[in-house]
Length: 253
Image 1: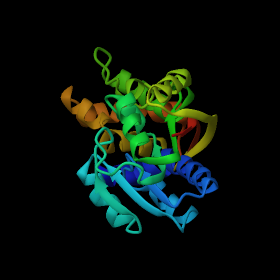
Image 2: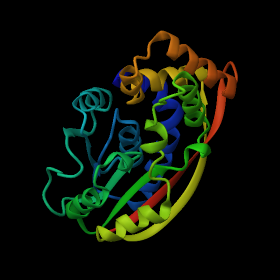
Image 3: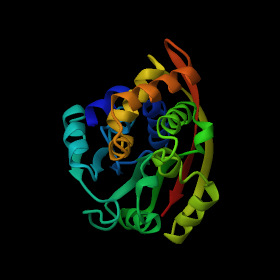
């Protein structure tokens, strides 16, 4: 999965927003940075380039992602870690960052509380979440393909998890419950570019939890072909572009 994720999804969906978060992080001039849910290191690489004086520690719950990220971005310190039980002492970081990871936390308030614990007084928590799936051209097209391939029981991972934390007021309430003051909130729409719609569909079918959901339903090559066909019908043939909306939050400990 990490290989497919890095090849098909990171350049299209995640790198544009990683560049944005890295620039925002650099403006805060941190010296000790912790990244949670770092994946294969798209944001990690941006942090090392944008904040070269900072010590960057990158973590992820998935051991395969940590191994892949450590090989790809060796300038950071990599560790496997659960965001709800961070293996770091109190007050050890100036900045905690997370790119499109908070939606996966089972207990977001508890995870935010852990982030606050490891931040020094006055430290910041910078992260983003996806907007509604209808505001994301790629994910919306892939979901339409999944619904066509599995009309009776479509996989709902995309609308319920990546796009399931798309109400900024709920995010703000969770931050407040964990003891954060919300300093800034931005709505940001960027354009993603892919070599083809098929590449995006294949990325989700082989490099994301959509893969397991399809396999649980007995899906195989025929269903994959339907998803690729529908995604292509909606996005077009050849190189494709689509808008992607996210929210960015900056909380102060």
